[in-house]
Amino acid sequence: MSIVKFKISLTRCKKHGLYNSNSSFLDLEKNLQAKCKYSLYLGELRNDNNIDQYRESIHKNKKYEKTSISICFDLPKKIINKYGLQEKDNYEGKKIFQNENIFSTEQTNSQRMLSGDIKVLLEKKIDITTKEALVNARVGQGMFRLKVLQLWDSRCCVTGSTTIDAIRASHIKPWRDSTDEERLNPYNGLPLTASLDALFDAGLISFESSGTLIVSPLLSERERNIFQVELGSLTKVPNELTAEYLPYHRKHVFRE
Image 1 (cartoon, rainbow, N blue to C red):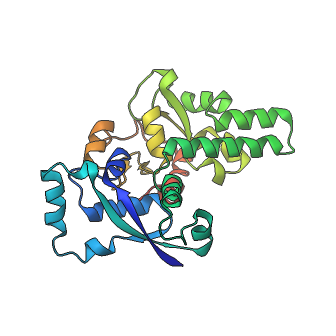
Image 2 (image 1 turned 60 degrees about the vertical axis):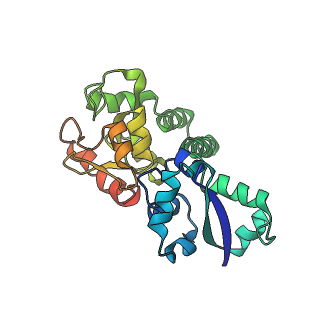
């Protein structure tokens, strides 16, 4: 493992929801660590006794648009070689590393995972009917979606919305972790509006077995207000078969 220093743009961090005018730099460090699997630290800022004054100065003078701060990553040799980071001034390599490991969007990651999962399904040696049902379930369509909606009176299980076109059938125990039987089991699903589905899939919200909605500390107060999740809950106490899946999501998906 080797330490590599990067310049991180505050503007990009703000754009991707990792930093805002109410954040401290240590908040930013925490959010960046949640996005990137490699160890990082804001060494210079941690050792700076004037860190709060520095941050306040940036916002007071509206300088964050042009400000970058130094962040150090502890990277394995294979990653350093992959991006050419052994070269001190390889700015292009550092840019690519950031794009792929920090600033990639959840939507892009989800699309990549979806394509990979469907490819695996198509290569499986199973009968065509089962294969079709699994593919449909993976993209939230077919009998899986229909049965999930039926369990929740054809409405979003949180908002109560009946706009079916805006509701997705989301797996509680993630697709990749489920058996084929669990992938088709409607009790392993929740009908959620698109925004709540995205938050649930990203581990930014989850549910107690009682139905109470819980929110990740990684979701800022401003974002909580936008999505109106702070006081949410399921519209009814989940069926005991559904409740059996919820602990898995809280333990393995939810980001505390």
